[in-house]
Length: 211
Image 1 (cartoon, rainbow, N blue to C red):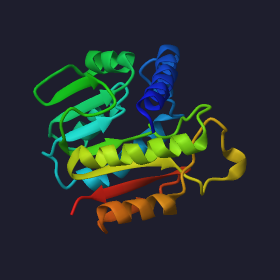
Image 2 (image 1 turned 60 degrees about the horizontal axis):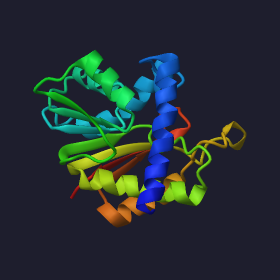
Image 3 (image 1 turned 135 degrees about the vertical axis):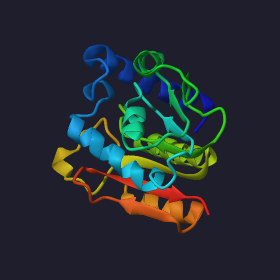
Image 4 (image 1 turned 90 degrees about the vertical axis):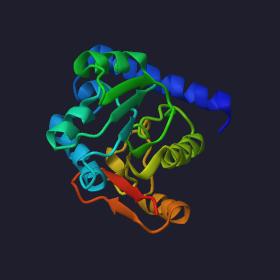
Protein backbone atom coordinates (compact mmCIF):
# COMPACT_ATOMS: atom_id res chain seq x y z
CA UNK A 1 0.00 0.00 0.00
CA UNK A 2 1.34 3.43 -0.93
CA UNK A 3 2.07 6.06 1.70
CA UNK A 4 -0.74 8.29 0.44
CA UNK A 5 -3.26 5.43 0.37
CA UNK A 6 -2.31 4.45 3.92
CA UNK A 7 -2.64 8.04 5.11
CA UNK A 8 -6.08 8.29 3.52
CA UNK A 9 -7.15 5.00 5.09
CA UNK A 10 -5.97 6.02 8.56
CA UNK A 11 -7.63 9.41 8.28
CA UNK A 12 -10.95 7.73 7.52
CA UNK A 13 -10.60 5.30 10.41
CA UNK A 14 -9.60 8.10 12.78
CA UNK A 15 -12.63 10.17 11.81
CA UNK A 16 -14.94 7.18 12.29
CA UNK A 17 -13.80 6.52 15.83
CA UNK A 18 -13.65 10.19 16.77
CA UNK A 19 -17.32 10.43 15.83
CA UNK A 20 -18.15 7.33 17.88
CA UNK A 21 -16.39 8.76 20.92
CA UNK A 22 -18.19 12.10 20.52
CA UNK A 23 -21.55 10.33 20.30
CA UNK A 24 -21.18 7.72 23.04
CA UNK A 25 -18.29 8.89 25.21
CA UNK A 26 -15.68 6.56 26.79
CA UNK A 27 -17.90 3.48 26.69
CA UNK A 28 -17.95 0.23 24.76
CA UNK A 29 -20.05 1.88 22.06
CA UNK A 30 -17.58 4.74 21.96
CA UNK A 31 -15.04 2.31 20.48
CA UNK A 32 -17.72 0.56 18.39
CA UNK A 33 -18.16 -2.55 20.54
CA UNK A 34 -21.73 -3.61 21.25
CA UNK A 35 -21.48 -4.40 24.96
CA UNK A 36 -19.31 -4.65 28.05
CA UNK A 37 -19.49 -8.45 28.28
CA UNK A 38 -18.18 -9.01 24.75
CA UNK A 39 -15.57 -6.26 25.21
CA UNK A 40 -14.18 -8.03 28.27
CA UNK A 41 -14.34 -11.37 26.50
CA UNK A 42 -12.07 -9.98 23.78
CA UNK A 43 -9.68 -8.67 26.42
CA UNK A 44 -9.53 -12.08 28.04
CA UNK A 45 -8.17 -13.74 24.92
CA UNK A 46 -5.01 -11.59 25.17
CA UNK A 47 -4.28 -13.02 28.62
CA UNK A 48 -3.25 -16.22 26.84
CA UNK A 49 -0.22 -14.22 25.67
CA UNK A 50 0.33 -11.78 28.54
CA UNK A 51 -0.59 -13.56 31.78
CA UNK A 52 2.66 -15.59 32.09
CA UNK A 53 4.72 -12.34 32.05
CA UNK A 54 2.99 -9.89 34.44
CA UNK A 55 5.96 -7.49 34.49
CA UNK A 56 6.48 -7.40 30.71
CA UNK A 57 5.99 -4.18 28.75
CA UNK A 58 2.95 -3.97 26.45
CA UNK A 59 2.02 -1.85 23.44
CA UNK A 60 -1.70 -1.45 22.74
CA UNK A 61 -2.03 -0.35 19.11
CA UNK A 62 -5.38 1.35 18.65
CA UNK A 63 -5.85 1.72 22.40
CA UNK A 64 -8.94 3.91 22.27
CA UNK A 65 -9.63 5.47 25.66
CA UNK A 66 -7.34 2.97 27.40
CA UNK A 67 -9.81 0.41 28.72
CA UNK A 68 -7.35 -2.46 28.29
CA UNK A 69 -4.95 -0.91 30.81
CA UNK A 70 -7.55 -1.14 33.56
CA UNK A 71 -8.36 -4.72 32.55
CA UNK A 72 -4.69 -5.73 32.74
CA UNK A 73 -4.16 -4.11 36.13
CA UNK A 74 -7.25 -5.92 37.46
CA UNK A 75 -5.69 -9.19 36.30
CA UNK A 76 -2.36 -8.64 38.01
CA UNK A 77 -0.27 -7.16 35.21
CA UNK A 78 2.15 -4.50 36.43
CA UNK A 79 4.44 -3.96 33.42
CA UNK A 80 4.80 -0.72 31.48
CA UNK A 81 1.86 -0.03 29.18
CA UNK A 82 2.06 2.23 26.11
CA UNK A 83 -1.11 3.05 24.19
CA UNK A 84 -1.19 4.38 20.62
CA UNK A 85 -4.21 5.64 18.73
CA UNK A 86 -4.64 7.63 15.52
CA UNK A 87 -7.53 9.63 17.00
CA UNK A 88 -6.24 12.50 19.17
CA UNK A 89 -9.58 12.62 21.00
CA UNK A 90 -9.11 9.00 22.11
CA UNK A 91 -5.64 9.70 23.48
CA UNK A 92 -6.91 12.81 25.29
CA UNK A 93 -9.62 10.69 26.90
CA UNK A 94 -7.11 7.98 27.86
CA UNK A 95 -4.92 10.59 29.56
CA UNK A 96 -7.93 12.05 31.37
CA UNK A 97 -9.12 8.66 32.60
CA UNK A 98 -5.81 6.94 33.39
CA UNK A 99 -3.20 9.66 33.67
CA UNK A 100 0.44 9.52 32.65
CA UNK A 101 2.68 7.72 35.15
CA UNK A 102 5.96 5.83 35.13
CA UNK A 103 4.09 2.66 34.20
CA UNK A 104 1.92 4.12 31.41
CA UNK A 105 2.13 6.44 28.43
CA UNK A 106 -0.19 7.49 25.60
CA UNK A 107 0.70 8.64 22.09
CA UNK A 108 -1.14 9.80 18.99
CA UNK A 109 0.11 7.71 16.09
CA UNK A 110 -0.20 4.58 14.00
CA UNK A 111 3.28 3.16 14.58
CA UNK A 112 5.08 2.58 17.89
CA UNK A 113 8.22 4.65 18.36
CA UNK A 114 10.04 1.72 20.00
CA UNK A 115 9.28 -1.96 20.63
CA UNK A 116 7.89 -3.54 23.78
CA UNK A 117 7.95 -7.13 25.02
CA UNK A 118 4.45 -7.66 23.65
CA UNK A 119 2.09 -5.83 21.29
CA UNK A 120 -1.66 -6.24 20.94
CA UNK A 121 -4.31 -4.77 18.63
CA UNK A 122 -8.02 -5.17 19.25
CA UNK A 123 -10.68 -4.20 16.74
CA UNK A 124 -8.54 -2.00 14.52
CA UNK A 125 -8.81 -4.30 11.48
CA UNK A 126 -12.60 -4.49 11.33
CA UNK A 127 -14.05 -1.20 10.06
CA UNK A 128 -13.01 -0.77 6.43
CA UNK A 129 -15.80 1.62 5.42
CA UNK A 130 -15.94 1.81 1.62
CA UNK A 131 -12.29 0.81 1.18
CA UNK A 132 -11.90 -1.92 -1.49
CA UNK A 133 -11.32 -5.36 0.01
CA UNK A 134 -7.94 -5.80 -1.67
CA UNK A 135 -6.59 -2.56 -0.24
CA UNK A 136 -7.89 -3.30 3.23
CA UNK A 137 -6.41 -6.80 3.10
CA UNK A 138 -3.03 -5.23 2.35
CA UNK A 139 -3.49 -3.00 5.39
CA UNK A 140 -4.27 -6.07 7.52
CA UNK A 141 -1.00 -7.74 6.50
CA UNK A 142 0.97 -4.52 7.04
CA UNK A 143 -0.52 -4.19 10.51
CA UNK A 144 0.34 -7.77 11.47
CA UNK A 145 3.91 -7.16 10.31
CA UNK A 146 4.00 -3.91 12.30
CA UNK A 147 2.93 -5.79 15.43
CA UNK A 148 5.66 -8.31 14.74
CA UNK A 149 8.31 -5.60 14.44
CA UNK A 150 7.04 -3.80 17.52
CA UNK A 151 7.27 -6.79 19.85
CA UNK A 152 10.22 -8.73 21.25
CA UNK A 153 8.40 -11.75 22.69
CA UNK A 154 5.11 -11.90 20.81
CA UNK A 155 1.91 -10.22 19.73
CA UNK A 156 -1.83 -10.79 19.42
CA UNK A 157 -4.55 -9.38 17.20
CA UNK A 158 -8.23 -10.04 16.65
CA UNK A 159 -10.36 -9.85 13.51
CA UNK A 160 -13.92 -10.51 12.46
CA UNK A 161 -14.16 -14.01 11.03
CA UNK A 162 -15.23 -15.12 7.58
CA UNK A 163 -16.64 -18.14 9.45
CA UNK A 164 -19.45 -15.90 10.72
CA UNK A 165 -22.99 -16.19 9.37
CA UNK A 166 -23.19 -14.49 5.94
CA UNK A 167 -26.55 -12.89 6.69
CA UNK A 168 -25.11 -11.14 9.74
CA UNK A 169 -22.20 -9.47 7.92
CA UNK A 170 -22.10 -5.75 7.25
CA UNK A 171 -20.73 -4.24 4.04
CA UNK A 172 -18.55 -1.71 5.87
CA UNK A 173 -16.74 -4.36 7.91
CA UNK A 174 -13.84 -6.63 7.00
CA UNK A 175 -14.13 -10.38 7.59
CA UNK A 176 -10.85 -12.29 7.44
CA UNK A 177 -10.32 -15.94 6.63
CA UNK A 178 -8.89 -17.42 9.87
CA UNK A 179 -7.15 -20.27 8.04
CA UNK A 180 -5.50 -17.84 5.63
CA UNK A 181 -4.34 -15.62 8.49
CA UNK A 182 -3.01 -18.62 10.40
CA UNK A 183 -1.17 -19.83 7.32
CA UNK A 184 0.42 -16.41 6.81
CA UNK A 185 1.60 -16.21 10.42
CA UNK A 186 2.98 -19.75 10.40
CA UNK A 187 5.01 -18.96 7.30
CA UNK A 188 6.16 -15.59 8.65
CA UNK A 189 6.72 -16.26 12.35
CA UNK A 190 7.16 -20.01 12.89
CA UNK A 191 5.06 -22.57 14.70
CA UNK A 192 4.47 -20.93 18.13
CA UNK A 193 1.06 -19.62 17.11
CA UNK A 194 -2.48 -20.14 18.39
CA UNK A 195 -5.76 -19.42 16.63
CA UNK A 196 -8.63 -18.83 19.06
CA UNK A 197 -12.14 -18.95 17.65
CA UNK A 198 -14.00 -20.73 20.42
CA UNK A 199 -15.10 -17.86 22.65
CA UNK A 200 -18.57 -17.26 21.28
CA UNK A 201 -18.07 -14.15 19.13
CA UNK A 202 -18.01 -13.73 15.34
CA UNK A 203 -14.27 -13.25 15.34
CA UNK A 204 -10.93 -14.89 16.06
CA UNK A 205 -7.75 -13.96 17.90
CA UNK A 206 -4.24 -14.83 16.74
CA UNK A 207 -1.57 -15.31 19.38
CA UNK A 208 2.01 -15.24 18.05
CA UNK A 209 5.10 -15.97 20.13
CA UNK A 210 8.47 -15.10 18.67
CA UNK A 211 10.88 -18.00 18.49
